[in-house]
Length: 116
Length: 116
Image (cartoon, rainbow over the protein chains, first blue to last red):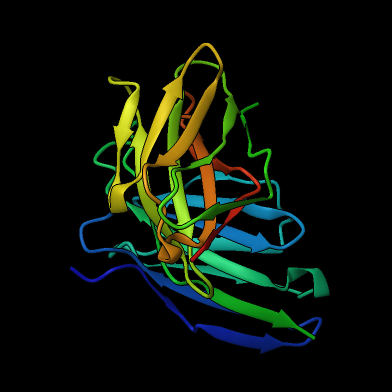
């Protein structure tokens, strides 16, 4: 079974631009979560989508948004990029048979975003 | 609010020796605890989880973790370290199953260095 895939793997943008990152979960997984990883702040939760609905959002500004499609694929968008948005963005999928389930999350390789 | 602490930035151990990577947690209610490992330029790989049951949890690659409720700890262990175990290890706690706002909170990570 294929793992979580993320595209693109690397991205270079300039301040003020916007960016869209894509995540394809493991087949059959309905939950997709996004995390930001930086040396200073570590791993921080961005948001989770389950059945096309955002279920939870971390403490990030409104410039960070996302969506999930009917096939469970997810995209996240960052508008008006800032230098501090440079990070590894990780997507994780989970089987999540039900909203209260606690299945482990499986992570993709991440998208390395560099903002110049 | 839930939190996870990994008190050691780095752990050094000789190959063949036992290793321990420490983790303590703070949550309200029952803890759902996870260990992940990250190799350079890779996403996170799931190692093991504690949901309920035996306090000693066995996971991938020969790793195990001991859940201690009274000490609110979930230390990762391996009887005999390999050089290939050198990586960044993250402890995490899942919260929000009862509120519908599920999220993984990660510790700051511990770099494990196994010397040959």
